[in-house]
Image (cartoon, rainbow, N blue to C red; front, side, top):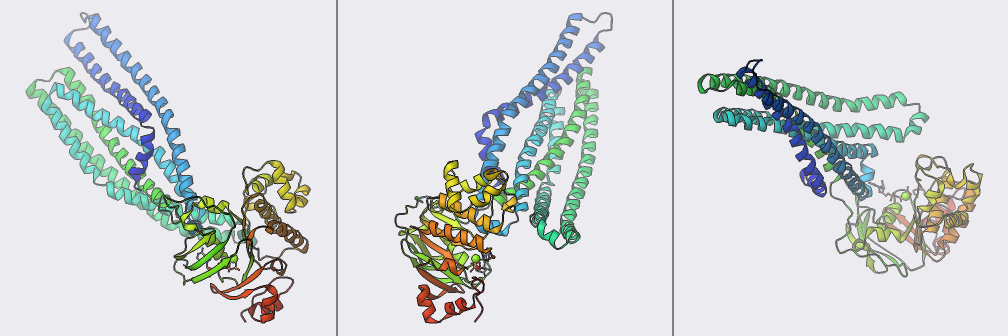
Length: 583
Ligand SMILES: Nc1ncnc2c1ncn2[C@@H]1O[C@H](COP(=O)(O)OP(=O)(O)OP(=O)(O)O)[C@@H](O)[C@H]1O
Ligand SMILES: [Mg+2]
């Protein structure tokens, strides 16, 4: 999406007040030109009559006109600001909503590859860019009115002089415009580099506990500043370039003013301009050069903001990787049978992980996935949730290809307990309710009880209203996991995906989690990535994976009888955890 088409998309929706506001600005700025013209008339009147016989009616009429234009100018400006207030906040809110949706619709790849600080900075640069554009646009409009209205009034006094002014202004304006491309590119580079720095800054903040744990604050500061070097270089380069361009342009405008004064003198001498006309033209030359100068500033400002917007829009509005098809229907789950049919998948720049991988999980069946770290267990369930699209083959739920249904309907039918549960920095009540945002407080509490969460919630001073901290850090891993289970209990999904945490849990937590999981799994189709034998005990079938392939399949008893890899894993387990050695 180009910058112009995107901005137009929003301006279109508020065009009524946008146009009204700009018309009001134009009218308000015009009054200053009329004022200049009235001043010139006043000087003309003074030169025509002496102080004793000046006709009072003309004098008062001029003063009244003066007064009226000043009052009208301020009032029109006030109305223009009101019109601004009518459309700007609305437009920013629309932009903000769309940016939010646009960001959240990106695939997990976007979030795993881009730093959150980077995303935030780019989002901010779009919103600030829009505000800047409007502010600069108003200045631009004021200069445009000053230039063209002055020239139009001069045309009534002397057409040739006006044409000369117009030609010179356009010519110098064109020369200034030549810097456009360079300003856009420079500004885009600066914004990109700035957002890179911001990404590193927030990466450091997100890992504040690691920074402290290793006593590496100074290292982090050095790291940040080393990354800032490129940004500072680009920023300096951009500022130098603009200073040089401004200096050059100012010189050009001084030459322009000189040529205007010269031409006015010639016209006064040879074509009989009145004194009032000359006064107006001289006032106008000042205004014209100042306006053309600031016109060039606003143009360079517009280009700079355009570059900033371009960087933000290209970053955030890049095409989504996982999209709903236009004809996508809602997924209807009846029995919840899952089939992976000859799927192929690889992460970018990595060897293929799944090659013609097939697996069927029958309705109501409970499958335990085990295998070495990195064998593709988490990726398999992420593909089922369509966090990534398979490159070949298909995944079906009750015969419906998941790539043909809406992502929302798919994910609403899956209760997902991830390997590491991250919580919102909100209350426990809100966090559990996330499993079903329509659930009442009573339902949330019932789910919490079933997931054995109430035991630790009761101990907290603010109970369900306790805020859990950033990503839920104020709770233990086991407590967070139980909250995830409570969420899954609240959701009415018939398919449960469990990516069990590999970290050790104390035996009490483990017992609670085991009990709550047993309840949760009843009457659901389950794919559980299990690291604990206690979880595997409840499974109908165990699948052993290695390098994206199934190497063994069967009930726990079958696999133990086979005395293959699972048997070895089982034997090697220590303290209840499966220890997948290489042999
Ligand atoms: N977002 C990603 N981008 C690129 N490669 C990835 C990504 N996520 C996982 N991988 C790679 O894919 C392979 C499979 O990873 P996956 O997370 O599926 O393993 P796993 O079996 O769940 O391991 P674990 O038991 O440690 O959780 C690994 O080699 C891993 O490095
Ligand atoms: Mg995993």
